[in-house]
Amino acid sequence: MTAYTGIQGQNILIVSSDPANPTEGQIWYNSTSNLLKGYANVVTNAWASGGNLPGTNTDMGGAGIQTAALGFGGSTGPMSVSYNGTSWSATPALNTPRRGPGGAGIQTAALGFGGYSGGATAATEKYNGTSWTSTGSLGTARYRIGGTGIQTAAIAMGGLTPGDNPSSSSELFNGTSWTASPSLNTARCAAGSAGTQTSALYFGGFAGASYFAATESYNGTSWTTVGSLNTTRRRLTGTGASNSSALAFGGDTPPSPGTATGATELYNGTSWTSNPNSMGTARYGIRGAGTQGLAVGFGGETPTISSATEEWTGSLLAVRTITTS
Image (cartoon, rainbow, N blue to C red; front, side, top):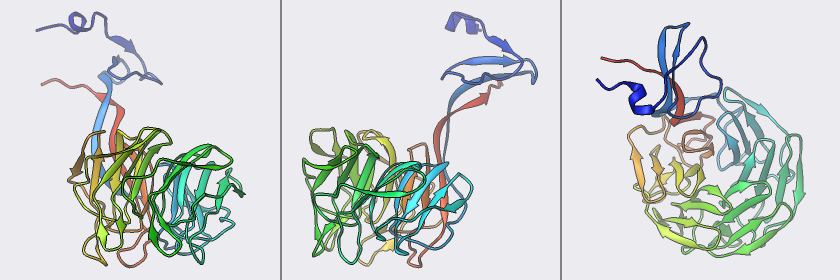
């Protein structure tokens, strides 16, 4: 039998308690529990119920991570709520009530832009964890718009302009104002989005009676069509850290008016993989926050408007007990 030291060139660390900040691949022996342990990826890829929204809502904007998320706007108008990984709490509402806004940022430094408020709006607001403040407007007013990034470096894409015309427009926000950037290859709205201002994805959506599975990737310079979703749909949502690591879930499938789906897919920079574990409650108009590994989805329609929240656990680094047999 080959010894660990022969492979790794080092002895196994003996400790009385697990390291506070282990590195991936690290192995140690816990003398208190008498267990051999390591720090490695654990793949769960499943949804679990979370705390419900304070009320039913759909077509919200979202920002943040699974344990510190923010939801704002939607069909109820001014609702704004924060999530701590267990329950939702009311927070100050947007100054301009709207549904279908784009969102970016974190729970205490979020950005909400566009949406529908008696018509497509270009209004943009910043949230600092205490209140919303109006800032520079979008160049193109639109709703059911995609968005991702952070408060000082966000990207907005697609949506419906006044007159309900699908848009291919893409804009960049620098913390103060929006600037036009290269357009999408396919004009559409109500698609999922993920990533950062210079590493973004836009996927699914619709234009008129046409539903899309198409995915476009942005590298800070141009949009490129890449691998399509396995499930064609609109009014879905997405989370993810970059254009090579994203999660798509929810939406409705054709033909119009569509059938709610809980289909969940993971993107690796080249293609989407369908996950066998769908959401517990299939719905469209859902909003999400987080990463490919840890996400939260909330609200939406079944078509009954929902208050349900679900938490996704994908692949994440965790301490594991090593056993032999």
